[in-house]
Length: 80
Image (cartoon, rainbow, N blue to C red; front, side, top):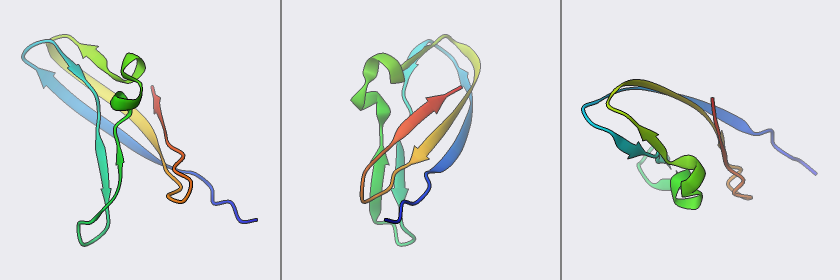
């Protein structure tokens, strides 16, 4: 049986916040004509672990997203 290897996508965000807030990353995967293939919103699935409280100031968020096998739907965020 063929099992494709997971593909990881690295993401880095440099933020400058004027006030404290809660942040959660949402990502949309689209094909070349703009049709949606998948949406990743881990804060909706597990708000206790994927919504980050940030104070005012500068922040750098780095994450690795394991892209899903679209036939199986396996996803996962790995925060550094």
